[in-house]
Length: 160
Image (tube, helix red, strand yellow):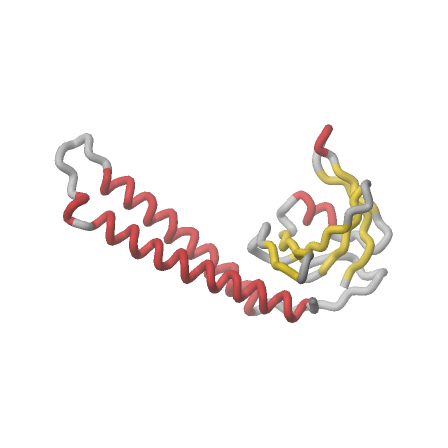
């Protein structure tokens, strides 16, 4: 998958998530303001709880709108073996057991997984531990992420 195709897949996934969350926020708002949610007594918190849900969903929808805008204006950069890793790098990492992992260093939407055939590409951000560790590395460099028993070592195999 090219980075242009990946960018398209990311924006499509964010657009779909935004549509779902916007609808959910509207439904939760309608539930919070519905006449059946009017409290019967001071201990009835149904409307209050529904309003918290509606607000949380509206906040998440706003975060997705911001991420979507970040990806719409994102300029993809090309990398070679000597170019230090930074935003828009697609990186192949190999762990200590030889398992390969593909990641894309994006501005937002960390954790989003994009299918590429039988494999997946995971979006990470520079704010994540792996993203911070990758910044400035080049092909052949090793990096460690985590602490103690959860510490993992990766080698940068490919960057594009």
